[in-house]
Amino acid sequence: MHVINQNLHLPSGENWIPNPQRLLHLDDRLTLEVASKLTEKIERLRKLSSKEIVIRIRSGGGQVKAFHKLEKIINPGKPGGKHCRFITIGTHASSAAAYLLVIGHLAYADPQTQLCFHGVRLDRFERQRRSLKREQVLAIGLRMDHENRAIANKMAQKVSFRLAARLCQLRERRLFKPDSNRAAKFFQKFSKAIGDELASASTKNLLQRTVDRFISLHAVSGHFPKGKPARIDRQLARKEARLFTAVIEREVRAHRKIAWTMKPAAAAEIMLDFLLARDFIRGRHSGLIDKLAKHHGEGLLTKSQEIRYRRLQGHTPARARRYLAVAARPVAFGLWCFALALCHGLLSGEFTLSACEAYWLGLIDEVLA
Image (tube, rainbow, N blue to C red):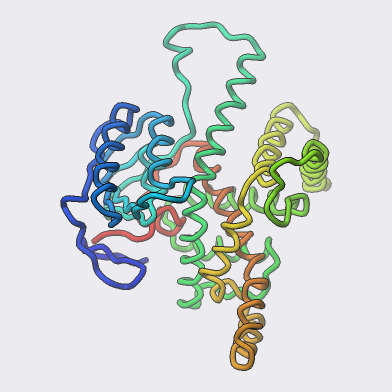
């Protein structure tokens, strides 16, 4: 694990001291009011310069709506205007504040930081003592899962790149030696290498469940679009139906050696697996995977692929670049699936992670000394 001093370590290798005039603090519960005030400060700083903005987080969490408001400022979807790189530093972060820490372009944590994750909560019905009908309960549950998937997607966009960096780091230390890019075998070995760096049994259990979820997700990836999905797809419902069937059939095959029946709880879990996989049909993950393969390409190759790449590089560099983009893409796609499964898993229970565990799971870039 990299432990660095309070002079932040940028990807370029240089040490960098935050400008106190571009340092913001989140010390309160993350409400919409707090998010609005923070947004105003960010906009003022962005008008002055496009240099980095640092947000130091010490918050017990707050509202999901407040997180989404700040996420749109940190990662604006539309080009144009001044875009700043946001560096987040956590001294304590729970719930929505933990999500905010993860989505920083660079994310750091103090050594004693604890990151607390859980999914969205809905307690207003208990306070109002309202009675609910069955269809209302189902609608609320699906809505909460939709929110969890949306948050997981935002976090996974950063986590996938950090996991790629962990993969390269483990390879350099010879703690991970990929001899095949077959998804299940590759990521089982990768997760074991990460698991050896974790101390908490609950975090190791989260990692194992992530591997299981990843294998299930990757098993139906043949139904995902290969490129950018069409804006209007008249066959979308048919594609979703085929995907849903594939998810069910995969689950049945996984239990073929035991006496198993699709009880209501199992059916509900299958539905949630389908909804997570369904986002790939509607999503825009193709460009992110290409960037991941381009940025970390050499570190995503097996030994035999690396030998071939080096040989091509020595003779025809242009052909070597094309080969690298193609050869690295399956693992890049796997990293995206793995990151999404991990982030969704974080929001499917209650987890408290140390700074070291957050580092190895790709939730932060480095730990401050």
